[in-house]
Length: 271
Image 1 (cartoon, rainbow, N blue to C red):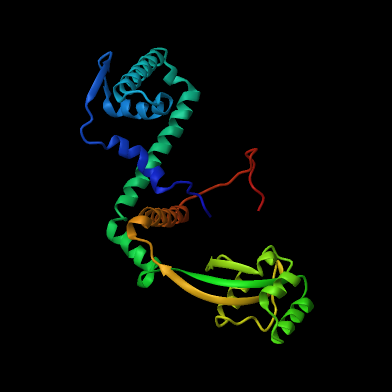
Image 2: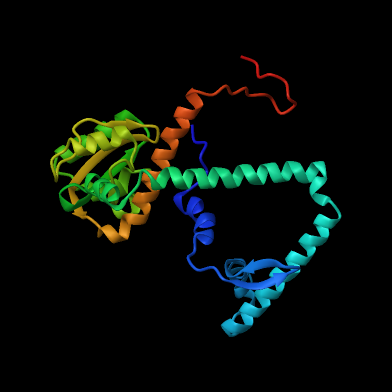
């Protein structure tokens, strides 16, 4: 069940803006302070439409917009728009979203640090090596009989690439069946298992069936590329860890919650 559409970046972004040290007041509207962080967020939004403008001009334009927003906000409050039921529902949704983001940020900050990310790095790239890569070719045919006929020709000394060009129905036919290098888990399990069972330079003595048809596989070899530098993969590893931690926590919360799922019309789902 994947109920978390959040990434670590999405969780961090709102809170980091508010966590800036030294956030001076840059304007006042009816005595209400406007902070630099308010203007900075607005400046980030309008900067793409003001390319080439000096930063000082972008800042003043952003500050003017924030002041205008404060004025409209004050007018809306004076008209008691905040008392309308539709506004209250939207406010509840926004509050739920903001609380969710801050809760997840705090939850993750207590459980993720650089040492744990480095431990995941060592687990993901053992012995300083990257993921296993397999280099192989195959001949794909429609039925077992055709596959056995290809194997018989190989047993007689036939050239694998030539036979692939003559008999394969797969898209690699034009390049002699060469699949290039692919990572472990990239191919369907039956194909990968058969390929990894071979010695480099050998082909399958029995046809291999998958949903695509019948394969004769030639293994060229396997290798592990050097692991990427920690700094290159720190971000993806942190996101991977955060998603796992949040997923596990959500499962704990679901286990202790009463959840009633209904149809779009509000009626109970049939069991």
